[in-house]
Image 1 (cartoon, rainbow, N blue to C red):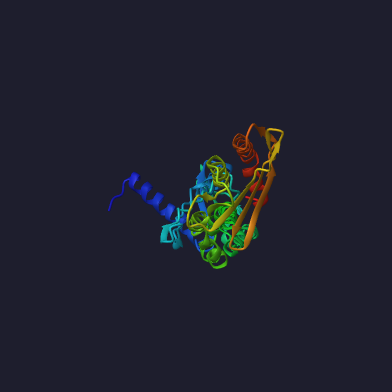
Image 2 (cartoon, rainbow, N blue to C red):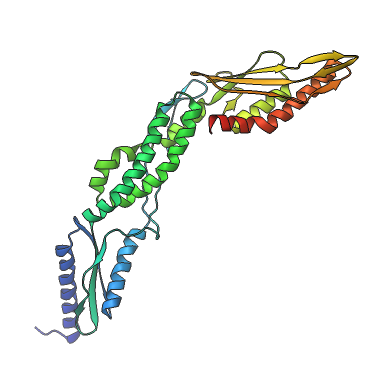
Length: 323
């Protein structure tokens, strides 16, 4: 049987490649290592190429979809269900490779060098674990705190905080999983599975942040609208007839008749009631106003209170409830 020089060269090239491939799989089995074998015209180039190839493995986008389905009561009292939004995490180029090592470059023939860049999975996982645990605990504590809240507004606030913590936790979880998915799932999987339910939890809390306005006396439309606007800015759905919260609003005009002139020292009080009692109260006095009769003076007093509401109420609610 006759072989041409070209055929022999191709044969030995393939044979040589299979030997090196066997070396990497034998010396660096996938169960224990992440490894990349590369070549170069010099030892330095071979090492650089191996490190670059291994880095590319980590720079690849990691995409995971976490779906959960649950039920919650909407403001109409009907049971609803909704799927959570997908959770994505990206491993970007700024991720520092853990436990990266290389073999000593080995000369292969006259003009080619070989080098293997590798990471010991167990060592790398142990390096990543403390940071992942810290992020897991941060997320998990917020999630559990939110889940134990009675008031929807506090559930909404704390679940939103948990959502931000979940982004860091998820990224670290997925990165650490590259080294050992089995171990990462075993230690942190229970907490990670909760990430998929966050969208539902937030939506459910938002649906229940409903408030009904109740005036103890007169109900001026412009004051009512201003209060609704401020409550809406704070995450409440105001104006609902079937509501979790009740806002009791009292207007004291403080009218005085003084020698043909009616004077008003308007006072506005708002008490927001939930299942646990009063969660917020507001009391503020407007500037003194006057008019030729009580009707005109009341109108001026209401305008003064509208201005007061627009200037102070939203900021005061957010500060008091820390939302």
